[in-house]
Image (cartoon, rainbow, N blue to C red; front, side, top):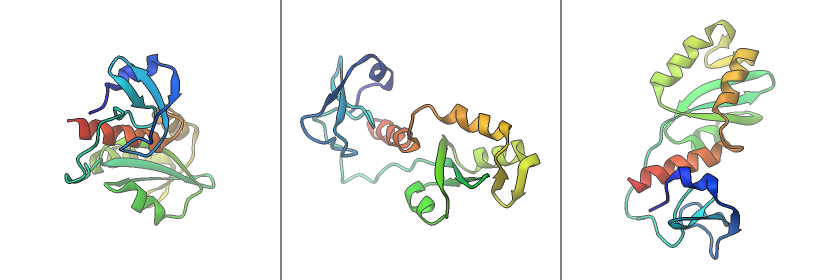
Length: 150
């Protein structure tokens, strides 16, 4: 089990006694529920049930190559992004094909072809709004942690 994400913002950073059982990171925070991984939000000292399948988190990803952005979707983002040439992962947005298609329509005026779009100020502003944490993988780790808590 992990602590509610809201409580993560009120604590100071510390080093966990051992790496997080979920993500393997060592940075932690002290909450009213105990020590919590600062990266994924998993409660230190508890173990995820490795016999259960890992939750599937559908994401819309935004990756950059030069001045172009690909807006795509995946249920396995690590595998998917490893197969696409890109310079930078800009952001994740929770959702599947419906969200991806909505973004394709929203930014249709800057579509270059397929799922690639010119990085315009409007698209850049949308991406910036999705960047709630410094690293998109941290946000993904929180989503996985939240899904495992349920």
